Structures are given as structure tokens and as C-alpha cells.
Image (cartoon, rainbow, N blue to C red; front, top):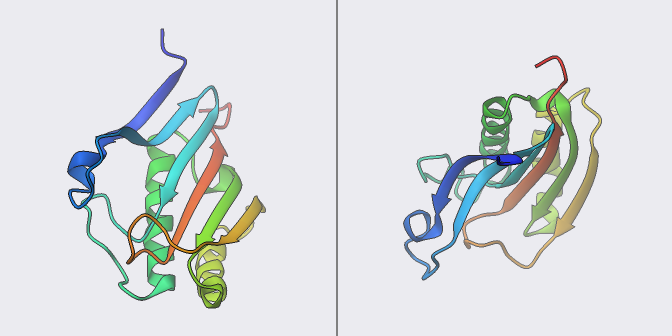
Length: 138
């Protein structure tokens, strides 16, 4: 019997045809009452980039993805306990954190932020992954 549930499984061969990878992944995993959400970027679930060159718009799309994945897992944004945010330029900190903060107002998660040299695709300016819980009343 599986001890976890995988949400939105995919293979990188189809998702990233510009790369020669063949990895089986998923967008989120539920283990017990914990939800681990894969890093989300400014790309919707159909593979369309939102906000080319605009870190705030990419952050908005990433948070839309996080919200949808958490709901599919039986949780929601209010149950996020940790975020990790990656930005490719220190100047993106304010627009990205302002947008993420708008989505997480009143949640008070712990948070780690990193400036990185780059993300998996050059047009991605930010990425966020989260850990949340599923409330016991679900």
C-alpha cells in the first residue's frame, strides 16, 4: 500500500522537449498530512510562460499553480508552513516577494530566499516551492 500520493505526474521528455531528459516527476506529493509542492514558476500547467521578463507576473502565475496544487491535495494556501523562493537577480526581490506576500497575507510561513545564477529555463526569473499540511478536519 503506498504511503504517499503523487499529484500531476509527468515525464520531462514531453514537458521539456528542448532538453534530452527522461525523468518521471510530479507536481506535488502528499505524504501523511504533509504536502510537498515542486518548484513552481511563471508557466501554467499547459506549458505557457506567463510574464516574459516580468518577475511579478511570473510570481503571480507560480502562486496560482501553488494554490491549485494544494487544493488538489486537500489543503490550501493558509496551511503553508514553509516556502523557498529562488530569484535570478537581487532586483527581483521586491516585486516577487510583494506578489508572494499578497497571496500569503496572514499565513506567516517560515521562508527561505535565494538568489541563484539561473533556473532550469533561461526565461524563468523566479521559482517557489512550498511545504504545507492537510488539516485534520479534511
